[in-house]
Image (cartoon, rainbow, N blue to C red; front, side):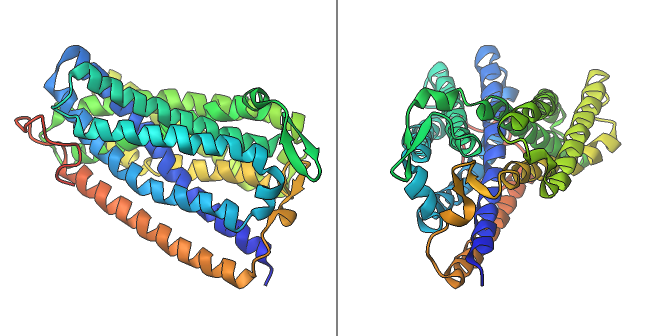
Amino acid sequence: MNALPVARLQFATTTSFHFLFVLLTLGLVTLVAVMQTRWTLGGKPELLRMTRFWGRLYVINYALGIVTGIVMEFQFGLTWTGLSTFAGDVFGAPLAIEALVAFFLESTFLGLWIFGFGRLPRWLHLTLIWLVTLTAYASALFIMLANSFLQNPVGSHVEHGTLRLDDFGALFANPALAASLPHVLGAALVTGGFFVVGVSAWHFLKRTTEVEFFRRSMRIGVIAALAGSIFVVNQGFAQFGELKMYQPDKLGMGAVGAPLGAMIGLGFLMFLCAIIGTVLLVRNWVTRARFLHYLMIAAIPLPFIAAIMGWLVRELGRQPWLVWGKLRTADAIADVPAGQILFSFIAFSLLFAALAVADWVLMARVAKRGPEPAEAPAELPVLSGV
């Protein structure tokens, strides 16, 4: 058995699962922060209930997504020791910053935000959710910094068989990062927007009595989905020019064609759905247009599918290189028997499947139950009732 394809499939599965959690986390935390800002400025109880309801869903997804991220980090040292040996001095720096600074700060601020409901002053509590949001985006920045280095290894040189960092600032100026980071952040906004819209549409189909609650939620979700889809489409095409500069063969590779076409098609489909939702909201038809509700529920998985296609385009297009022009993927794999890698792949896949089911069951339970009653005490923690 050849260990290389098994190891690649294992890492692809791990990264894909983790990426799906991350997208929804980034999108939802942004919308929750906007909702809480509006409540803090205006004081409408409906906006506080929205903050708490969508905040619960965000926290569930965040908690379960952490596990997949930890497993992904382990694989660099267990399966891809060649990458750690050759490029660890450069590639490891942004990953370490992401873990030690962005991730731990984000977790700390999130804990304070969760248990600070009804206990902290409004403006301090609002500051916490924005700090959670900013550190979440900082995590995305450093992860994309590391990934962009694999695409275009700037600011480094080879010395005694390993890569040495010349200029840390060059990593931030990497052309591979300039277009890809806004594309990923736009995808996260689309994912969060379609999720909020889809859940709201489900409640409208069920003849909810919380009409104003879900009308407001759908309005915010549609605006996020529209803005995010514009960024996704624009920055997606903007990357083509960069790819031709430092990876001239990438777009012509056969393995990339199918996922690239699917990603482009899904991007325009999401943009169309967001446009339709915007028109119906402007005309105030949102509670009556049942076809829109079915459409928006069906659209929930579209951003996730498009994200996987985009990841395949980005990673398959770099092959056979792991670090473009510097280290081949076949030379980076650890000296581990293929059977052991296959065993860990099966074990990790079962773990991820269980996490995905748990995430879906918990989020579906909270989403179907709907918001807490208007008279619920404000000091209840965000996770109450999960």
